[in-house]
Image 1 (cartoon, rainbow, N blue to C red):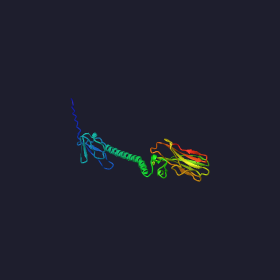
Image 2 (tube, rainbow, N blue to C red):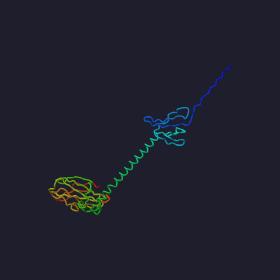
Image 3 (spheres, one colour):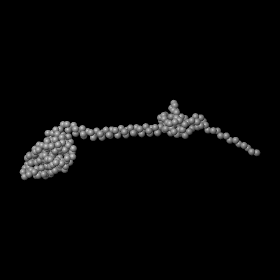
Image 4 (cartoon, rainbow, N blue to C red):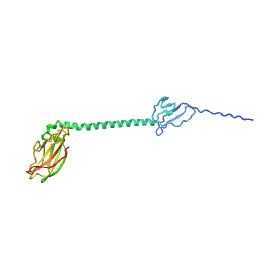
Length: 249
């Protein structure tokens, strides 16, 4: 005798997946459930905001129906994109501000020089032999170099000065004590043509006994390319002796 056993299998219901956003505090898990049969699918990526995805997705009343849930964009991806856009905006803003600051730093000195140039009495070669103080060239002048040396009973300090507004240079000598038996002088020399001026030519006069300083007339150098140097001199009555000289700029 044979016994026949019949086995049947109940099909598992399937259907379109439903996705729901859970926004309660501390629980933002993206949950899914089949339309029939109560079969729970694996957890999907966490969602915190409504999603916008490609083909096959419909969002209504806070629910999204996806044909393939793997194609849905997670909230983490959306937040990452928003973060990257914000970061890019910050970087671009910093770049624009940096460029503006750099551009202003380039134009400010030029504007400063042009403003002073309108207030001075000469420029470039027209300053040759003229007094730097009377022409207003000392207002923006700087010290290029300073050198010191023995000048008989005193020590002389010679300085090479240059004014961008005037485009000119001159010499300034200072002695550490009032001169007694000697007199002093400062000479500016332009290198391209050897043009020279001292304190008696365009300056405030040589350093006499009892005095300590003087400055020379100017040599023009509008483009700051002709180069010049300054020399400090003293004289006991037997001729001028060079006490010190600056390098050329």
